Image: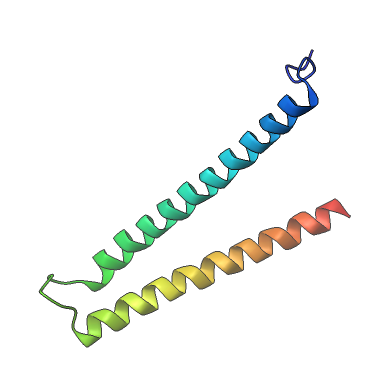
Length: 89
């Protein structure tokens, strides 16, 4: 027996809202983890020795590094979406 069967309509709505809020928080955490990963990888790749400010070369390297990760992530996400949509038809 499903544990939601014994709940009232209002309780079911509250449970659904709670599940939605949890999903949103999980997405936020996943995004933050992704940003952390980008930061670590791009920092290691681009920053030779930290100083009081970034020089032009380091700044451009960081920008390019993050843009490559974003482009790659979008490409993979779009390809995965296409595969799922083809499988659903």
